[in-house]
Amino acid sequence: MGAKTCYPGAQVTIFRTEQQAQADNLPQELDITPYIGEGGSIRTAKDLYNPKGRWEVVIPDKPWGKDAGSGGGQSSFIVDSIYGLIAPMNVVEIRLARDAYKYTNRLPVIMRGFVRDVAREETMSPDGQPTRFVRLSGDDYGCIGEIVKLHQWYGSSGQYLNPILRLNELAIKNAVLPASQYIETLLEELWNRQLFNMMAETGNGHVEQVQYDGQVEVGAVYTAQIATNNGTAWKLMMDQADTPWNELYIEDRDIELDDGDHGPFLVYRPTPYAEISQNLDPNLDNNQFIENTGQKIDPQKVRIVWADDGEKVGAGEFVMMRSASYRRHDREVYNIFWVTGQALKYAADKQMAVAIANEVADVHSLHHENSQVEIYGARPLEVNSSQVPDTSTPPHHVADEPELARVSISEWTKKRRQWLMAANRDNVKFDEGELVVHGNEQLRIGSYYLVLRGSFKVQHYITQVSHHFVPYREFTTTLGFIRANNHWLREQWRSMGQSPYFMEGRQGVLEE
Image: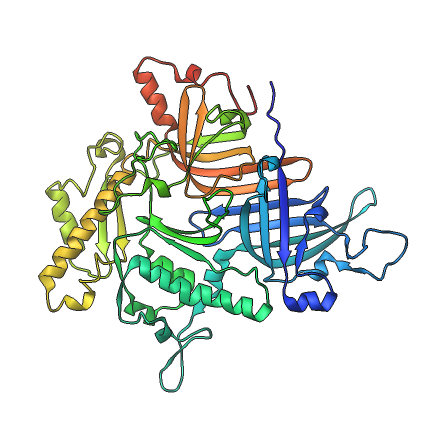
Protein backbone atom coordinates (compact mmCIF):
# COMPACT_ATOMS: atom_id res chain seq x y z
CA MET A 1 0.00 0.00 0.00
CA GLY A 2 1.27 3.48 -0.84
CA ALA A 3 0.21 7.02 -1.42
CA LYS A 4 1.27 9.54 -4.02
CA THR A 5 3.32 12.51 -2.83
CA CYS A 6 2.12 16.03 -3.61
CA TYR A 7 3.67 19.43 -3.01
CA PRO A 8 0.70 21.73 -2.39
CA GLY A 9 0.92 25.49 -2.14
CA ALA A 10 -1.42 28.29 -1.08
CA GLN A 11 -1.57 32.06 -1.02
CA VAL A 12 -4.18 34.32 0.55
CA THR A 13 -4.10 38.07 -0.10
CA ILE A 14 -6.34 40.75 1.37
CA PHE A 15 -6.74 44.05 -0.51
CA ARG A 16 -7.84 46.89 1.77
CA THR A 17 -9.12 50.40 1.15
CA GLU A 18 -7.01 53.55 0.79
CA GLN A 19 -8.44 54.88 4.06
CA GLN A 20 -7.28 51.79 5.97
CA ALA A 21 -3.78 52.01 4.51
CA GLN A 22 -3.47 55.69 5.44
CA ALA A 23 -4.78 55.10 8.96
CA ASP A 24 -2.21 52.44 9.97
CA ASN A 25 0.63 53.23 7.55
CA LEU A 26 0.55 49.69 6.18
CA PRO A 27 0.10 48.75 2.51
CA GLN A 28 -3.31 48.10 1.00
CA GLU A 29 -2.19 44.62 -0.05
CA LEU A 30 -1.64 42.23 2.84
CA ASP A 31 -0.26 38.78 2.11
CA ILE A 32 -1.47 36.80 5.10
CA THR A 33 -0.13 33.44 3.85
CA PRO A 34 2.87 33.35 6.26
CA TYR A 35 0.51 33.95 9.16
CA ILE A 36 -1.71 30.93 8.50
CA GLY A 37 0.85 28.56 10.02
CA GLU A 38 0.18 25.54 12.19
CA GLY A 39 -3.41 25.44 13.37
CA GLY A 40 -4.58 27.60 10.48
CA SER A 41 -6.64 26.49 7.51
CA ILE A 42 -8.24 27.58 4.24
CA ARG A 43 -11.66 26.48 3.01
CA THR A 44 -13.57 27.38 -0.14
CA ALA A 45 -16.91 26.05 -1.39
CA LYS A 46 -18.95 26.57 -4.55
CA ASP A 47 -22.34 25.13 -5.50
CA LEU A 48 -23.74 25.18 -9.04
CA TYR A 49 -27.23 25.88 -7.72
CA ASN A 50 -26.27 28.53 -5.16
CA PRO A 51 -25.78 32.20 -6.05
CA LYS A 52 -22.55 32.61 -4.13
CA GLY A 53 -19.51 30.66 -3.04
CA ARG A 54 -18.16 30.72 0.51
CA TRP A 55 -14.64 30.84 1.92
CA GLU A 56 -13.01 30.81 5.37
CA VAL A 57 -9.43 31.39 6.50
CA VAL A 58 -8.33 30.67 10.08
CA ILE A 59 -5.11 32.35 11.28
CA PRO A 60 -3.30 31.97 14.61
CA ASP A 61 -3.45 35.44 16.16
CA LYS A 62 -0.13 37.28 15.96
CA PRO A 63 0.95 40.93 16.01
CA TRP A 64 1.14 42.47 12.56
CA GLY A 65 3.34 45.33 11.45
CA LYS A 66 6.88 46.39 10.58
CA ASP A 67 9.44 44.50 12.66
CA ALA A 68 6.59 42.81 14.50
CA GLY A 69 8.52 39.56 14.73
CA SER A 70 11.75 41.07 16.05
CA GLY A 71 10.94 40.39 19.69
CA GLY A 72 12.79 42.05 22.55
CA GLY A 73 10.07 44.07 24.21
CA GLN A 74 7.35 46.32 22.86
CA SER A 75 8.01 47.77 19.42
CA SER A 76 6.51 51.02 18.20
CA PHE A 77 6.21 49.40 14.78
CA ILE A 78 3.82 46.69 15.96
CA VAL A 79 0.42 47.78 14.71
CA ASP A 80 -2.25 45.34 15.80
CA SER A 81 -3.70 41.89 15.58
CA ILE A 82 -4.81 41.03 12.05
CA TYR A 83 -8.31 41.29 13.52
CA GLY A 84 -7.90 45.05 13.72
CA LEU A 85 -6.53 45.50 10.22
CA ILE A 86 -9.19 43.82 8.09
CA ALA A 87 -12.73 45.07 7.58
CA PRO A 88 -15.89 43.72 5.91
CA MET A 89 -15.98 44.20 2.13
CA ASN A 90 -12.20 44.09 1.81
CA VAL A 91 -11.26 42.08 -1.28
CA VAL A 92 -9.78 38.60 -0.92
CA GLU A 93 -7.91 36.42 -3.40
CA ILE A 94 -7.28 32.74 -2.64
CA ARG A 95 -4.78 30.70 -4.68
CA LEU A 96 -4.22 26.95 -4.32
CA ALA A 97 -2.38 24.23 -6.21
CA ARG A 98 -1.75 20.51 -5.71
CA ASP A 99 1.82 20.82 -6.94
CA ALA A 100 2.97 24.42 -6.62
CA TYR A 101 6.20 23.85 -8.52
CA LYS A 102 4.26 23.39 -11.77
CA TYR A 103 3.44 27.09 -11.95
CA THR A 104 6.30 29.34 -12.96
CA ASN A 105 4.42 32.59 -12.29
CA ARG A 106 1.73 32.58 -9.58
CA LEU A 107 -0.53 29.87 -8.27
CA PRO A 108 -3.96 29.82 -9.96
CA VAL A 109 -6.84 31.69 -8.34
CA ILE A 110 -9.45 29.40 -6.79
CA MET A 111 -11.73 32.13 -5.45
CA ARG A 112 -12.06 35.90 -5.55
CA GLY A 113 -14.46 37.62 -3.24
CA PHE A 114 -15.07 39.81 -0.23
CA VAL A 115 -14.57 39.63 3.52
CA ARG A 116 -17.99 39.52 5.18
CA ASP A 117 -17.11 38.44 8.74
CA VAL A 118 -14.05 39.09 10.95
CA ALA A 119 -13.84 37.26 14.28
CA ARG A 120 -11.22 36.88 17.02
CA GLU A 121 -11.51 33.82 19.24
CA GLU A 122 -9.64 33.36 22.53
CA THR A 123 -9.88 30.13 24.54
CA MET A 124 -8.01 28.28 27.27
CA SER A 125 -7.13 24.65 26.57
CA PRO A 126 -7.53 21.93 29.26
CA ASP A 127 -3.78 22.02 29.92
CA GLY A 128 -3.88 25.74 30.65
CA GLN A 129 -2.48 26.97 27.33
CA PRO A 130 -4.15 30.06 25.84
CA THR A 131 -5.21 29.86 22.22
CA ARG A 132 -6.09 32.79 20.00
CA PHE A 133 -7.31 32.63 16.40
CA VAL A 134 -8.61 35.13 13.88
CA ARG A 135 -11.34 33.74 11.66
CA LEU A 136 -11.99 35.50 8.34
CA SER A 137 -14.89 34.44 6.14
CA GLY A 138 -16.91 35.75 3.25
CA ASP A 139 -18.35 35.17 -0.20
CA ASP A 140 -17.25 35.23 -3.81
CA TYR A 141 -18.52 37.85 -6.29
CA GLY A 142 -21.92 36.19 -6.30
CA CYS A 143 -22.72 38.07 -3.10
CA ILE A 144 -23.01 41.34 -5.07
CA GLY A 145 -26.04 39.87 -6.82
CA GLU A 146 -27.68 39.50 -3.40
CA ILE A 147 -26.50 42.84 -2.00
CA VAL A 148 -28.02 44.85 -4.87
CA LYS A 149 -31.81 44.92 -4.55
CA LEU A 150 -34.77 46.51 -6.27
CA HIS A 151 -37.49 47.82 -3.96
CA GLN A 152 -40.90 49.24 -4.78
CA TRP A 153 -40.56 52.54 -2.99
CA TYR A 154 -42.99 55.08 -4.40
CA GLY A 155 -42.88 58.82 -3.92
CA SER A 156 -45.90 61.12 -3.80
CA SER A 157 -46.07 61.07 -7.61
CA GLY A 158 -45.98 57.29 -7.73
CA GLN A 159 -42.42 57.28 -9.03
CA TYR A 160 -40.45 54.05 -8.74
CA LEU A 161 -37.36 54.64 -6.60
CA ASN A 162 -34.19 52.65 -6.08
CA PRO A 163 -31.19 53.53 -3.91
CA ILE A 164 -28.74 52.60 -6.68
CA LEU A 165 -30.61 53.64 -9.83
CA ARG A 166 -34.10 54.16 -11.13
CA LEU A 167 -35.73 51.26 -12.92
CA ASN A 168 -36.20 53.28 -16.09
CA GLU A 169 -32.43 53.72 -16.32
CA LEU A 170 -32.19 50.02 -17.12
CA ALA A 171 -33.75 50.86 -20.49
CA ILE A 172 -35.56 47.51 -20.51
CA LYS A 173 -39.00 48.43 -19.17
CA ASN A 174 -41.85 47.17 -21.38
CA ALA A 175 -39.34 45.54 -23.70
CA VAL A 176 -38.81 42.03 -25.03
CA LEU A 177 -35.12 41.16 -24.99
CA PRO A 178 -33.14 38.06 -25.92
CA ALA A 179 -32.58 36.16 -22.67
CA SER A 180 -28.80 36.46 -22.84
CA GLN A 181 -29.03 40.22 -23.39
CA TYR A 182 -31.43 40.57 -20.47
CA ILE A 183 -28.99 38.82 -18.10
CA GLU A 184 -26.10 40.93 -19.41
CA THR A 185 -28.08 44.16 -18.94
CA LEU A 186 -28.80 43.39 -15.30
CA LEU A 187 -25.16 42.40 -14.77
CA GLU A 188 -23.87 45.68 -16.16
CA GLU A 189 -26.50 48.01 -14.72
CA LEU A 190 -26.83 46.44 -11.27
CA TRP A 191 -23.85 44.26 -10.34
CA ASN A 192 -21.08 46.08 -12.13
CA ARG A 193 -22.39 49.53 -11.30
CA GLN A 194 -22.32 48.57 -7.62
CA LEU A 195 -18.77 47.24 -8.02
CA PHE A 196 -17.66 50.41 -9.80
CA ASN A 197 -19.07 52.53 -6.98
CA MET A 198 -17.24 50.38 -4.43
CA MET A 199 -13.95 50.75 -6.27
CA ALA A 200 -14.33 54.51 -6.68
CA GLU A 201 -15.32 55.08 -3.06
CA THR A 202 -12.66 52.89 -1.44
CA GLY A 203 -9.79 53.40 -3.86
CA ASN A 204 -9.43 49.63 -3.97
CA GLY A 205 -8.25 48.82 -7.49
CA HIS A 206 -8.72 45.09 -6.88
CA VAL A 207 -12.52 45.40 -6.91
CA GLU A 208 -13.03 43.79 -10.31
CA GLN A 209 -15.89 44.00 -12.77
CA VAL A 210 -17.70 40.71 -13.37
CA GLN A 211 -17.22 39.63 -16.98
CA TYR A 212 -20.00 37.95 -18.92
CA ASP A 213 -19.96 34.62 -20.73
CA GLY A 214 -23.38 34.39 -22.37
CA GLN A 215 -23.83 31.18 -24.34
CA VAL A 216 -27.64 30.94 -24.43
CA GLU A 217 -28.81 31.56 -27.98
CA VAL A 218 -32.57 31.02 -27.79
CA GLY A 219 -35.40 32.45 -25.73
CA ALA A 220 -36.56 35.96 -24.92
CA VAL A 221 -37.67 37.73 -21.75
CA TYR A 222 -40.71 39.97 -21.37
CA THR A 223 -39.29 42.58 -19.02
CA ALA A 224 -42.40 44.58 -18.08
CA GLN A 225 -42.96 42.26 -15.14
CA ILE A 226 -39.84 43.64 -13.46
CA ALA A 227 -41.86 46.74 -12.64
CA THR A 228 -43.89 44.68 -10.17
CA ASN A 229 -41.00 42.61 -8.81
CA ASN A 230 -39.05 43.12 -5.62
CA GLY A 231 -35.88 41.32 -4.78
CA THR A 232 -32.19 40.96 -5.41
CA ALA A 233 -30.43 41.30 -8.74
CA TRP A 234 -29.74 37.57 -8.54
CA LYS A 235 -33.45 36.81 -8.11
CA LEU A 236 -34.36 39.03 -11.07
CA MET A 237 -31.91 37.04 -13.17
CA MET A 238 -32.90 33.58 -11.92
CA ASP A 239 -36.62 34.30 -12.33
CA GLN A 240 -36.03 34.66 -16.07
CA ALA A 241 -32.99 32.40 -16.59
CA ASP A 242 -35.29 29.45 -17.41
CA THR A 243 -33.73 26.66 -15.41
CA PRO A 244 -33.29 23.68 -15.65
CA TRP A 245 -32.72 24.22 -19.37
CA ASN A 246 -30.07 26.83 -18.58
CA GLU A 247 -27.44 27.34 -15.86
CA LEU A 248 -26.37 30.62 -14.26
CA TYR A 249 -23.36 30.74 -11.94
CA ILE A 250 -20.17 32.59 -11.00
CA GLU A 251 -16.86 31.10 -12.16
CA ASP A 252 -13.41 32.33 -11.11
CA ARG A 253 -11.03 31.97 -14.03
CA ASP A 254 -7.27 32.24 -14.04
CA ILE A 255 -4.83 32.88 -16.85
CA GLU A 256 -2.89 29.73 -15.90
CA LEU A 257 -5.90 27.46 -16.47
CA ASP A 258 -8.22 29.26 -18.88
CA ASP A 259 -6.32 30.22 -22.02
CA GLY A 260 -5.96 33.87 -21.12
CA ASP A 261 -9.28 34.44 -19.33
CA HIS A 262 -8.79 36.04 -15.94
CA GLY A 263 -11.25 37.30 -13.36
CA PRO A 264 -14.77 36.54 -12.10
CA PHE A 265 -17.23 35.54 -14.83
CA LEU A 266 -21.00 35.25 -14.81
CA VAL A 267 -21.69 32.18 -16.94
CA TYR A 268 -25.12 31.82 -18.57
CA ARG A 269 -25.25 28.70 -20.69
CA PRO A 270 -27.50 25.86 -21.86
CA THR A 271 -27.32 22.95 -19.44
CA PRO A 272 -24.75 20.50 -20.90
CA TYR A 273 -26.18 17.15 -19.88
CA ALA A 274 -24.89 14.07 -21.66
CA GLU A 275 -26.88 10.93 -22.43
CA ILE A 276 -26.11 8.04 -20.09
CA SER A 277 -24.45 6.14 -22.96
CA GLN A 278 -22.32 9.07 -24.12
CA ASN A 279 -18.57 8.55 -23.77
CA LEU A 280 -16.98 11.94 -23.10
CA ASP A 281 -13.32 12.58 -23.87
CA PRO A 282 -11.47 15.89 -23.29
CA ASN A 283 -9.19 15.10 -26.22
CA LEU A 284 -12.09 15.16 -28.69
CA ASP A 285 -13.66 18.23 -30.28
CA ASN A 286 -17.02 16.63 -30.99
CA ASN A 287 -18.36 15.51 -27.60
CA GLN A 288 -22.14 15.32 -27.88
CA PHE A 289 -24.67 16.66 -25.38
CA ILE A 290 -28.46 16.55 -25.32
CA GLU A 291 -29.81 19.07 -27.84
CA ASN A 292 -31.31 21.92 -25.89
CA THR A 293 -34.36 23.63 -27.44
CA GLY A 294 -32.96 23.95 -30.90
CA GLN A 295 -29.42 24.87 -29.92
CA LYS A 296 -26.50 22.50 -29.66
CA ILE A 297 -23.99 22.71 -26.86
CA ASP A 298 -20.54 23.92 -27.92
CA PRO A 299 -18.20 21.15 -26.66
CA GLN A 300 -15.35 23.67 -26.42
CA LYS A 301 -17.32 25.48 -23.72
CA VAL A 302 -17.76 22.43 -21.47
CA ARG A 303 -14.84 21.70 -19.17
CA ILE A 304 -13.89 18.00 -19.05
CA VAL A 305 -11.14 17.09 -16.58
CA TRP A 306 -9.24 13.82 -16.73
CA ALA A 307 -8.35 12.57 -13.30
CA ASP A 308 -4.65 11.83 -13.22
CA ASP A 309 -1.98 10.97 -10.70
CA GLY A 310 0.50 13.57 -11.91
CA GLU A 311 2.50 11.08 -13.96
CA LYS A 312 0.28 9.86 -16.77
CA VAL A 313 -3.03 11.30 -17.92
CA GLY A 314 -5.81 8.89 -17.13
CA ALA A 315 -3.50 6.66 -15.13
CA GLY A 316 -5.95 6.30 -12.29
CA GLU A 317 -6.99 9.10 -9.99
CA PHE A 318 -8.64 6.50 -7.79
CA VAL A 319 -5.31 6.01 -6.05
CA MET A 320 -5.67 9.69 -5.03
CA MET A 321 -9.09 9.21 -3.46
CA ARG A 322 -9.64 9.82 0.22
CA SER A 323 -13.18 8.48 -0.03
CA ALA A 324 -15.84 7.74 -2.63
CA SER A 325 -19.60 7.39 -2.20
CA TYR A 326 -22.04 6.39 -4.97
CA ARG A 327 -25.80 5.92 -4.63
CA ARG A 328 -28.92 5.55 -6.78
CA HIS A 329 -32.60 5.99 -5.98
CA ASP A 330 -36.02 6.31 -7.59
CA ARG A 331 -37.02 9.64 -6.03
CA GLU A 332 -36.44 11.51 -9.28
CA VAL A 333 -37.90 9.01 -11.72
CA TYR A 334 -40.31 10.74 -14.14
CA ASN A 335 -42.26 9.43 -17.11
CA ILE A 336 -44.74 12.23 -17.89
CA PHE A 337 -43.33 15.61 -18.90
CA TRP A 338 -45.10 18.90 -19.34
CA VAL A 339 -43.94 22.49 -19.77
CA THR A 340 -46.19 25.49 -19.27
CA GLY A 341 -45.43 28.87 -20.78
CA GLN A 342 -45.76 31.48 -18.05
CA ALA A 343 -45.62 34.40 -20.48
CA LEU A 344 -48.41 33.04 -22.70
CA LYS A 345 -50.73 30.86 -20.63
CA TYR A 346 -53.52 28.89 -22.21
CA ALA A 347 -55.44 25.68 -21.52
CA ALA A 348 -52.35 23.76 -20.47
CA ASP A 349 -54.07 21.15 -18.29
CA LYS A 350 -56.51 20.20 -21.02
CA GLN A 351 -53.76 20.03 -23.62
CA MET A 352 -51.65 17.78 -21.41
CA ALA A 353 -54.58 15.40 -20.90
CA VAL A 354 -55.22 15.23 -24.65
CA ALA A 355 -51.52 14.74 -25.41
CA ILE A 356 -51.19 11.88 -22.93
CA ALA A 357 -54.40 10.25 -24.20
CA ASN A 358 -53.02 10.39 -27.74
CA GLU A 359 -49.64 9.12 -26.51
CA VAL A 360 -47.76 12.04 -27.96
CA ALA A 361 -44.10 10.99 -28.04
CA ASP A 362 -42.64 14.18 -26.57
CA VAL A 363 -44.95 14.13 -23.53
CA HIS A 364 -44.26 10.81 -21.86
CA SER A 365 -41.80 7.94 -21.53
CA LEU A 366 -44.27 5.56 -19.90
CA HIS A 367 -42.77 2.55 -21.63
CA HIS A 368 -39.08 3.52 -21.56
CA GLU A 369 -37.11 0.75 -19.84
CA ASN A 370 -35.78 3.06 -17.10
CA SER A 371 -39.06 4.80 -16.29
CA GLN A 372 -41.84 2.44 -17.30
CA VAL A 373 -45.17 3.04 -15.64
CA GLU A 374 -45.68 -0.66 -14.84
CA ILE A 375 -42.76 -0.53 -12.37
CA TYR A 376 -42.60 3.07 -11.14
CA GLY A 377 -46.18 4.22 -11.62
CA ALA A 378 -47.18 7.47 -13.30
CA ARG A 379 -44.71 10.16 -12.27
CA PRO A 380 -45.27 13.59 -13.80
CA LEU A 381 -42.68 16.37 -13.99
CA GLU A 382 -44.23 19.75 -14.74
CA VAL A 383 -41.91 22.75 -15.16
CA ASN A 384 -42.65 26.35 -16.07
CA SER A 385 -40.77 28.15 -18.84
CA SER A 386 -40.49 31.84 -17.99
CA GLN A 387 -39.27 32.79 -21.46
CA VAL A 388 -40.95 33.27 -24.84
CA PRO A 389 -39.55 31.82 -28.07
CA ASP A 390 -38.21 35.07 -29.54
CA THR A 391 -38.64 38.84 -29.52
CA SER A 392 -41.29 38.78 -32.27
CA THR A 393 -44.01 37.14 -30.15
CA PRO A 394 -44.40 39.29 -27.01
CA PRO A 395 -47.45 38.65 -24.83
CA HIS A 396 -49.18 41.91 -25.77
CA HIS A 397 -49.52 40.60 -29.35
CA VAL A 398 -51.75 37.76 -28.21
CA ALA A 399 -54.91 39.84 -28.62
CA ASP A 400 -53.91 40.83 -32.16
CA GLU A 401 -52.72 37.45 -33.41
CA PRO A 402 -53.83 34.84 -30.86
CA GLU A 403 -53.40 31.83 -33.15
CA LEU A 404 -49.85 32.76 -34.21
CA ALA A 405 -48.89 33.36 -30.59
CA ARG A 406 -50.41 30.04 -29.51
CA VAL A 407 -48.59 28.08 -32.21
CA SER A 408 -45.31 29.80 -31.40
CA ILE A 409 -45.43 29.10 -27.69
CA SER A 410 -46.69 25.55 -28.31
CA GLU A 411 -43.64 24.78 -30.43
CA TRP A 412 -41.42 26.37 -27.77
CA THR A 413 -42.82 24.28 -24.93
CA LYS A 414 -42.64 21.18 -27.13
CA LYS A 415 -38.88 21.63 -27.55
CA ARG A 416 -38.53 22.27 -23.84
CA ARG A 417 -40.42 19.02 -23.15
CA GLN A 418 -38.17 17.07 -25.46
CA TRP A 419 -35.08 18.16 -23.57
CA LEU A 420 -36.76 17.56 -20.21
CA MET A 421 -37.60 14.00 -21.22
CA ALA A 422 -34.16 13.22 -22.66
CA ALA A 423 -32.44 14.61 -19.56
CA ASN A 424 -34.60 12.80 -16.98
CA ARG A 425 -35.90 9.50 -18.34
CA ASP A 426 -32.79 7.56 -17.21
CA ASN A 427 -32.51 9.08 -13.74
CA VAL A 428 -32.88 5.73 -12.00
CA LYS A 429 -29.65 4.53 -13.66
CA PHE A 430 -27.52 7.59 -12.89
CA ASP A 431 -25.35 7.69 -9.76
CA GLU A 432 -24.93 10.65 -7.45
CA GLY A 433 -22.67 11.06 -4.46
CA GLU A 434 -19.44 12.52 -3.18
CA LEU A 435 -15.73 12.12 -3.88
CA VAL A 436 -12.89 13.33 -1.69
CA VAL A 437 -9.61 13.54 -3.60
CA HIS A 438 -6.17 15.00 -3.09
CA GLY A 439 -6.50 18.72 -3.74
CA ASN A 440 -7.01 19.57 -7.39
CA GLU A 441 -7.22 23.21 -8.47
CA GLN A 442 -8.61 22.29 -11.90
CA LEU A 443 -11.91 20.99 -10.56
CA ARG A 444 -14.87 23.36 -10.88
CA ILE A 445 -18.63 23.29 -10.71
CA GLY A 446 -20.34 22.70 -14.04
CA SER A 447 -17.56 20.45 -15.35
CA TYR A 448 -17.24 16.75 -16.07
CA TYR A 449 -14.73 14.71 -14.08
CA LEU A 450 -13.48 11.45 -15.59
CA VAL A 451 -12.03 8.83 -13.25
CA LEU A 452 -10.28 5.67 -14.43
CA ARG A 453 -10.45 2.70 -12.05
CA GLY A 454 -9.18 -0.49 -13.58
CA SER A 455 -11.12 -0.86 -16.83
CA PHE A 456 -13.81 1.58 -15.68
CA LYS A 457 -13.85 5.15 -16.92
CA VAL A 458 -16.61 6.81 -14.94
CA GLN A 459 -17.79 10.33 -15.74
CA HIS A 460 -19.34 12.64 -13.14
CA TYR A 461 -21.13 15.98 -13.54
CA ILE A 462 -19.75 18.19 -10.78
CA THR A 463 -22.23 20.43 -8.93
CA GLN A 464 -20.26 21.15 -5.74
CA VAL A 465 -16.55 21.78 -5.17
CA SER A 466 -14.97 22.40 -1.77
CA HIS A 467 -11.24 22.85 -1.12
CA HIS A 468 -9.65 22.37 2.32
CA PHE A 469 -6.01 23.34 2.87
CA VAL A 470 -4.18 22.79 6.18
CA PRO A 471 -0.50 23.80 6.16
CA TYR A 472 1.95 20.92 6.62
CA ARG A 473 -0.90 18.41 6.76
CA GLU A 474 -3.28 18.17 3.80
CA PHE A 475 -4.92 19.68 0.77
CA THR A 476 -8.15 17.91 -0.20
CA THR A 477 -10.98 18.60 -2.63
CA THR A 478 -14.52 17.37 -1.99
CA LEU A 479 -16.80 16.95 -5.02
CA GLY A 480 -20.56 16.60 -5.08
CA PHE A 481 -21.68 14.99 -8.33
CA ILE A 482 -24.77 13.87 -10.24
CA ARG A 483 -25.36 11.91 -13.47
CA ALA A 484 -22.44 9.53 -13.03
CA ASN A 485 -22.54 6.43 -15.24
CA ASN A 486 -20.91 3.99 -12.80
CA HIS A 487 -23.92 1.67 -12.56
CA TRP A 488 -24.66 1.83 -16.28
CA LEU A 489 -21.10 0.74 -17.10
CA ARG A 490 -21.40 -2.19 -14.72
CA GLU A 491 -24.51 -3.33 -16.58
CA GLN A 492 -22.69 -3.12 -19.89
CA TRP A 493 -19.80 -5.26 -18.66
CA ARG A 494 -22.15 -7.83 -17.13
CA SER A 495 -24.06 -8.09 -20.40
CA MET A 496 -20.77 -9.10 -22.05
CA GLY A 497 -20.12 -11.80 -19.47
CA GLN A 498 -17.48 -9.78 -17.59
CA SER A 499 -17.21 -9.25 -13.83
CA PRO A 500 -17.39 -5.53 -12.98
CA TYR A 501 -16.07 -6.26 -9.50
CA PHE A 502 -12.82 -7.69 -10.81
CA MET A 503 -12.57 -5.28 -13.74
CA GLU A 504 -12.27 -2.44 -11.25
CA GLY A 505 -8.91 -3.91 -10.36
CA ARG A 506 -7.36 -3.90 -6.92
CA GLN A 507 -7.20 -0.15 -6.72
CA GLY A 508 -9.19 1.35 -3.90
CA VAL A 509 -9.04 4.61 -2.04
CA LEU A 510 -5.41 5.54 -1.32
CA GLU A 511 -4.32 2.15 -2.66
CA GLU A 512 -2.14 0.90 -5.51
